[in-house]
Amino acid sequence: MAAVAYVGGLRFNLTPSYALGIWRIMPLDREVVVGDLIFICPPPTASFAVARERGYLRPGLCPGWFSPLIKTIVAKEGQHVGVGRTIVIDGSPLPYSQIRQSDADGRVLIAHAGGFVPPGHLFLYSTFAGSYDSRYFGPIPAAGVLGLAQPVLTVTP
Image (cartoon, rainbow, N blue to C red; front, side, top):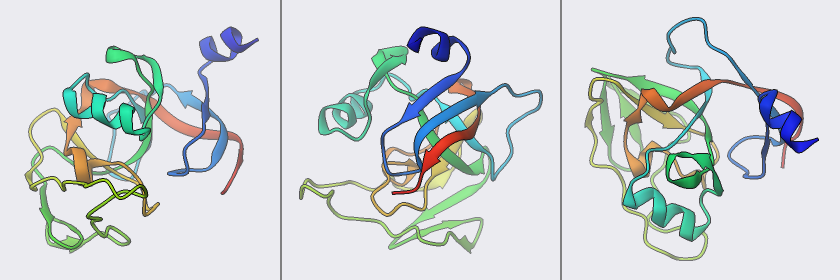
């Protein structure tokens, strides 16, 4: 049954960045835009390996054996992301985007330095205060987009 759900694009979200429960990956027939809620595979980098070790993301079937992330696109290539106490995109503050110095277990978090989003990359975000998103890992390749994220049967924590 789990294999059928997986092939059908269903995924379980067990992290509080978005509602807990069953989500569907909806195929895209257009380019992604700012504001889209997406499923995306993180790149297989050392920083994401550390994130998995810390429990920020789970093992999964993306490259590097990472699970896909559910995040909202808040900036695309060419847009400027300022990082201070909060995130500012092209001069506009991003609500609820405070930068944390440490995670819930007291481990140091290092904020992304900011700058222009490079070609072929996306800056991702969740309003959940404890979200591990581009505030910390920076822009990631848009090539990892799996599709739009659609809740099917979820509960908000």
